[in-house]
Length: 267
Image 1 (tube, rainbow, N blue to C red):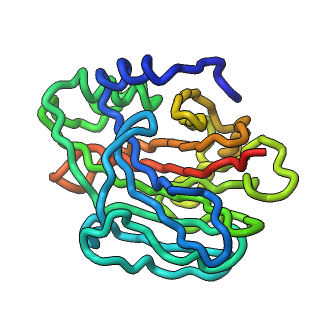
Image 2: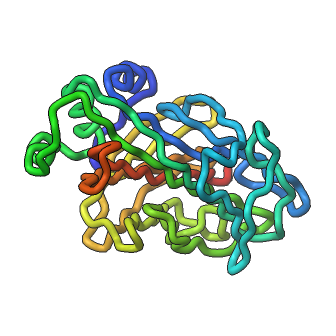
C-alpha cells in the first residue's frame, strides 16, 4: 500500500538535517553492463541518494559477495580501494552484489534525537519500549549494522533474485531488467529469514538529471509490497528493524538496515 506522499529533494534535505537517519547503499556506476565489461560500484553512506563514498576495508564488513544464479564468490579487493567493487561481470544474466557491515555504535546524549530517528523509521512507541525493557535514560548507545544488495543486469539481465541469508534483506520478486518488465517492482522484506508484515519501506527515486523523490510504503501480511518505478530512474529501497539488546552492556538497541538498489532500463 503506497502512501500518497512525495517529497522533493530540497524538502528532504531540510528534513534530514533534523533527523539522524543515514542510509547505506551499493551504488553502481551503471546498473546494466555488457558481457565482458566491468561492474563498478561504490559503497555509499548518506541521505537522499547523496553521501560519502567508502573504501574497501575488510574490518568494516562481515560479508561482501557477488552472486549469479547458484554461484557466488567473495569480493576480493585491496585495502583502501575506491570504488570498493570493480571487477569483470561473471556472465550474462542477473547479478546480485551483497554487503553486510560489521557493527558500529552511536551514542545518544538526548532522547529527542533518538525519538526523531525512531519516528522517521516508523517506531513511534520507542519511549514505551525503552522503559519496558528497563533501559536507562540518555546517554545510551545504539549498535547498528547495514545489509545491502544491488541488482545488476549483465547482457540480457535475465534471472531471479533470492533470499541470501542476510540478517535483514529485500528479495526482488520481479526483475527490472527482464524483457516485459511492467514497471511494477515487487519485493519482499525479510528479517532472520521471516517476512516482515506491515513494515515501512522508504523509497528514494532518482531521475536521470538527479532530482530525488521520496515515498513511504508498507508491506502486506506476507512482507510484500509493489512499487511503481519509472524507466531511466535509479532506486534505493530502505527498511529498518529496531530490536532491544538484553545481553550486552555495550548498547541497548540494535538497528538493522536493509537496502536494495537497482536501475530501471530506459525505453
